[in-house]
Length: 252
Length: 74
Length: 222
Image (cartoon, rainbow over all chains, first blue to last red; front, side):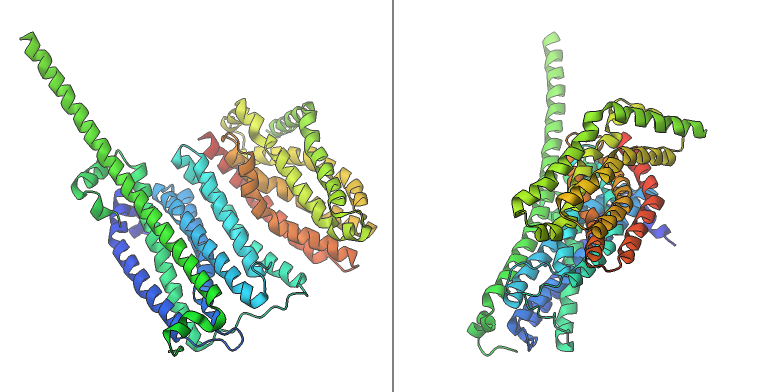
């Protein structure tokens, strides 16, 4: 069943696959993000409680969902790497990590910018913001651990173990934080509920979600290509690729 | 269309600062990671090209010096 | 065969007691951190009682991070860890023995110190009993999860700060449930469910962490 995947354990095939997929990822990013953002900013209705500030939802919610999604993708790559000893899987894992961290940062920042008009303060220890913050720490931990090893094969394995430990913890952290948050509900700040997402808001939201997903896939693919080239620098196929292809055409 | 004029769109019903701040920082962050990734890939390839050229030069100068040695001995 | 594991146990215990300074320093750190809080926030008993569980737990996590490195560092540096891995002993069991010793020499003194700490922070007897229960269930969890990260960073020079960066986010659920148990005890509410959740996390760690630690040690030995 999984046999079709096996050739991609070889870096050369994985690199070729990256090159095939990348234009589609970029196309998806451009189409979905621009349609979703324009729809969300211009055409979607305002919320009766939050007025125009609700338009932040079209970047906050997709980035929040996909920051978790990217972490899970990273952990799946780590698991594949540890179980089947695939070097490309570890490379994929470390290619996703910085992208996931940036998306997590976006979720945090947009959450804060939404919180200021709604809650009257930039930061509130709201369940979602708190677990996003912890998620950012987990991403930074994986990236930092990868960085301290000189031997990148060893680094991939070590960071992979940490990513797996983290992914077991992500649901525990999330639910414990939600539970902690309901326990310590602050009385001084009147909390406006996140709006129930109605149909005319749902479509642009879903389109933005797809756009962010394509974005993460595209940037991770570019980073994966770099990672493969860096690790396989002295292989004949890389040498050939560079001398034939030149530099400019391969970059994006 | 929810807005009557462009200035009203920019104004965002009084929430302009927060909405545009959120969208602006998101844009900067996303463009930042894309540029960093693409530049990194490009520099990596460039450095490999450079390394190849260096190896080529070393090879050439070696054969050349060998030839001159032969010339001298003749 | 089992005498070999008891041999490892005795050896580790002897070694730990020979390095008394390393055992005592984290405990001194714990007492110092806890005694800083009354000085920092003022000596009012009701405030201290309110922040007490959180303070003790945060200080316990930080001080255990300080002593955590000892778990494999010396054995890694003098090569005896490699010998143990080549010896044909089951590495999972060896690791379990090592964690048990580490828990005995680092967490048990912490448990013995806990009455003093709770007295410093004006905790009631009910709160103290809850604190003791959470520490009993929580410190083995800290040792086991911490050992994974120690195993990964043991070959890295200056791994100390990295260890904190890796581990603190992972200990957050433990902190939440433990402090909430003590808070419930302060309000005379039942806190069995919080203890049950910590126990569940502990069982999960018992089941999986030896494999993760053995794997991470193999990665470090390369």
